[in-house]
Image (cartoon, rainbow, N blue to C red):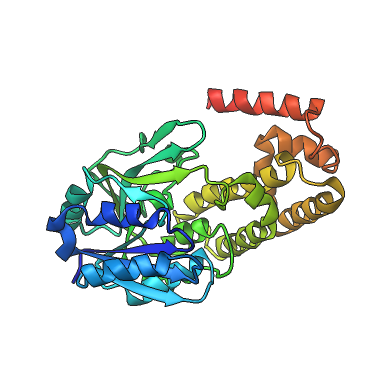
Length: 342
């Protein structure tokens, strides 16, 4: 059995795929322990040919799946079906891993038996040249945690990202994980939908993932959020329905609630801060706001800690897209002050 299966969702990334694969294959001592599953999602460039080249060169390590386009979630679904590793994680094909620490990470996984293994990651922002490292200051590294008794309040607004998480493969399968296909923004589905099956966790002090941010065609680009806002709406509603089915007695529900609030806040940001065309989108935002109030009034109320949501509700979102409005400036100042005080 391989120690870890790494799924590499691939779509039109001929400029970046070699960098990703080379970083994972850099140290030959780990090749017998890793499985790289490159899932070509209907690329129209030379991504598939590049992946096949690596499959031919490393037949015991690299597996290529070629499929019609189905979106990021579909590539993870396809990879999970064939994964043979004890552990499972996702590395996007325009990102890469830290070659200085990846070998030690794989060696550490051999000794692990927790359901979740967390590691750090670093964001590299293209246009500003800024580098940001994410470290879980709230956790004691190399300590095993019981997720049924964990103090989730200690995380604040932090959570376990896709880029930091390595899961036991058997737990993902036990959870019947299946992400929405042909849909953007399924990261939170990946993070939360299998979480009830996870019972233990450890954070290892390795900075593994290199997250490449700033490409104009990335789904996290604000223009993409605007264009694909109904995808985000779909994910919000799926996670909300999942949350509603969890008994209040389950200690993990508080963590899932906190993550859901972050997801919902992002949805309001898309509508209230992205300067969308007013006539087209205010109706959408009001409908979603009324839906949330009807379906989960506790979460609806909790979002009012964000002043821009509270005040936009009072004015029926009519000023949501008004650039540099007095209301927007006041809310932004209050929001920044709240974050500094937190």
